Amino acid sequence: MKKYEYMTVDLSAEPSFNVHIKLERYIEKLNEYGKQGWRLISGTDDWKYSIFEREIDDEK
Image (cartoon, rainbow, N blue to C red; front, side):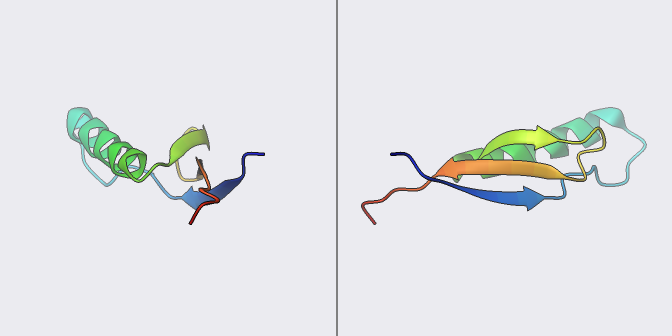
């Protein structure tokens, strides 16, 4: 049976008037978590409350 762990992260954009910079920073954060095995499963409109999950490796 697969097992998962979860975490919540504040992904709200850093202050910037440039929308392209905000999107780049947001995508960088998502890619950082993705490289660690995390998958975004939920987020609010402002991304302040984002929930990630990843499968737990039972063999460790």
